[in-house]
Image (cartoon, rainbow, N blue to C red; front, side, top):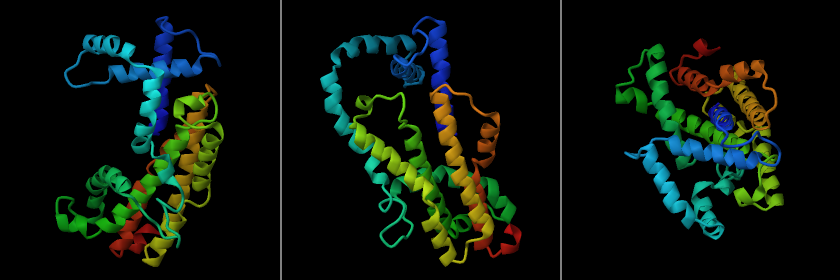
Length: 275
């Protein structure tokens, strides 16, 4: 739901700007411009060291005139190589190898740390474990970390799809040729629609950790990502959002915690508790 919250912030900012006469009501001709300005406002109001609002405005007035389209075009390839890293999310590079084995990257492992820390504090007590004891954590960390990292990589793919809509976004802003852009979106969607958990399921099954409830939670994850794409698309195109879809997405969101909990039961030989 993180992307949905970001889009809600953009829409709230747009409404505020319109109420103050900063921008006119949105139309097909100025949606992109208004969205860009809303994101700029959101950036400016974020804390930045000791800078206050007046100092931020002074910096904008001083340095924006020094920027140009040619400067931004020169900066784009340098930043996109390390910032967007779209091509690194191809099936067979991040999520599985040529043998169909599940793979995770360092970025995924680092990003999964916060979830693992929260999981250990929230769930270990239900297994009679102390999250403050290193032995309790490191004994099961490899499998738990690998699983959460794999899920996080798929979640990152979904966020890229949400951030690469096919409507209302100019290709030049994103630095893609139109056909390549559409192909990339299609490729990412195909990854999430073609049994994305299959390599991880195979891995857990080989280690005797897979249960039907874990498989069901993986299905919940796929449903959650599909709902997130639908809700974010509706919000961006100003279409009606179903309250039922929102509530369903909220219910499904923490599927990864449930997967980790079920795997921990299996690792501790408590299969009967997770059937």
